[in-house]
Image (tube, rainbow, N blue to C red; front, top):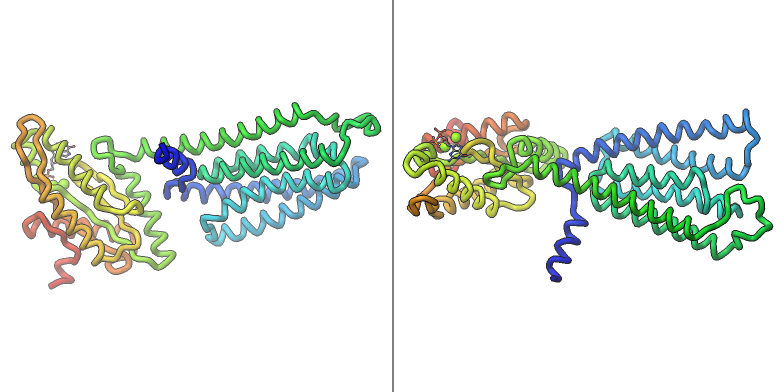
Length: 383
Ligand code: GH3
Ligand code: MG
Ligand code: MG
């Protein structure tokens, strides 16, 4: 019971998949651009107001100071992001800023002794929905939760403060241009706000689930080729940026055609599932293991140098060779073996294509040397 509660909490508060995290960076940049655009347009409103309309000086002051703050913040975030500054905590700050900006706007009305505008605001309140909708573009459940809780908590604090410090429905406020205060209206607002946060959370959960469905190989449960390629690109650029090692291993089952011919395709499938399971159990969560084609597998090992990757693959090779597969139809015990090639960044090559080709070439060298082995150096280099 305790374990399942902990598990569901862990799934609620889980980090986004690295490929979605990459999409989230693009989403954050888009939001930064929209924020700059919106703040620029809003900066023009007081100018238009002062030329064409009689306007409320207090409201204009609130609007103008908020817009200036937003504009400066937006521009800073945009400039930092366009210079590749995107640490994992940035989205927590920006989404918190978006929500809190609306709250600060409403709180300023309290400060200016205009509580009715704060609690029945016609325009500022809707800003919460823009902020909450934007969390969906960060593809991170944790941001949907924190923004939703922040918006709910801050707004509840504002209306509670207003209701306790002012007699809001006193007739002296008539004709109530912003309406009277009603708790039932406020509760409805809070429920709609919470629903918006739940919807953005559901959208992110669905994206994660769809990504999972689209990126898994149904036979082995490992990742599919497209996903491995995407992850390789993401991990390699991270390794290049932070000056870390990264290894890639290409693995191929030995003489698989003859295994199929001798024992049948069903036995071949069981063997592939077994190899897939052993691969999954042999690597860390941060490694990416995928089925690349028929009986070929690829593993990406971030922060792992050539020697460490070689050792890990050697252990896997031994494990596969020592694990007998039971043929489902005839019950025979079948031995399968694998051959693997390993290449590392920055030791062997700098770009993704070269690293992959090298690992692939080394896998073929392992085949030539007799199979059931791991090759981590090129024939030319080692001779
Ligand atoms: P080598 O040691 O040189 O790799 O020999 P090999 O027989 O493994 O290589 P080859 O590429 O000639 O054959 C690969 C075989 O893998 C052929 C194909 O029938 C089998 N295969 C590919 N995908 C599957 C699958 O999903 N299930 C089964 N049972 N067999 C598969
Ligand atoms: Mg093969
Ligand atoms: Mg093959």
